[in-house]
Image (tube, rainbow, N blue to C red):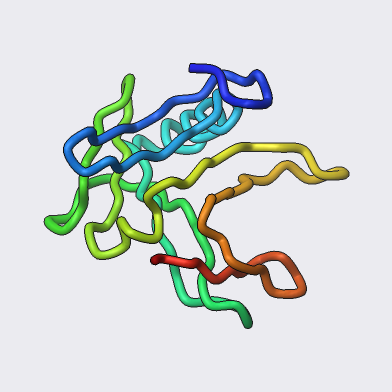
Length: 127
């Protein structure tokens, strides 16, 4: 699938609940590099309370799934999303970009209401 920036991306879609996550090819390549170094089975996409705006997305390498995970099989790895956080993760786009001398994962969400001053944490408009 091609997105607006003409980059290929993986879209995880649960048609029943209209839930989706987009992962660009650059992010997918980096995820594979990270998880296969230590024999992990995949990643968990999660959030945590952080910063002055409220939340921060993060990726965590996993060796096993949890009971409360939504589990998506993709290619040769697994993507898990905690069920309690699906409303905040649904609609997320994950990219991997170079910014100056750093390469970082970038998280974009259509419902982000505002960022804190440092741009690390955010607040979502969920209604």
